[in-house]
Length: 250
Image 1: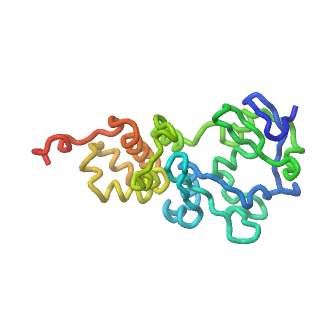
Image 2: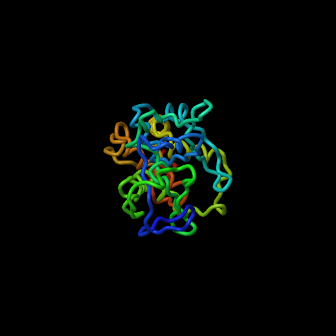
Image 3: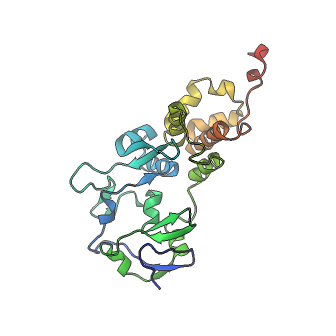
């Protein structure tokens, strides 16, 4: 049985939805909407477009500071026209569909962390896709969309901040927020930070790791997440050089 808009759903619940060219509302959900980008979203999209992270962020996003956490929140920037379309929408659909953001993969569902459940967020009076297609199990739908499990980059960053409890641990230092943004979203500039500052004189990284981060974005993201974990919750996440503890060795 199809669930009405807003009703609590579990992984075993069913709903009806399809989205394809020819439906009257095709791509209407891709305009004038707030799409929060995860670190994994930025990672995927900047690789898809083959541009540096800072160029992607400057061209396609806006950044806000969360009042809840004090950390940066990155939003996809809509086009500056009357329709306020997503910059990646074409008449044929999404130009980056295989690498679309997490929120787009979830649609028409959303996950309620407080209730540990899902709900349909699409407006039934506007979304004709809710009236077409076969019944589908929530878990199967999420699996098909690549939304059942977080992107590997998001898993690493979630682990890095897992011990933080907001608003109790709200970040109030702008420099900490800036460094979080650098490590979580602007990986290409984080690479310059690692290789162009005293970072490698402070942290004792294996030579193969240092070589890996020069070319491999996933290795770089892994180091960035460990650095955040070191700063936020676990001083054992990265090994410090002996010189840091013994001034005579400096």
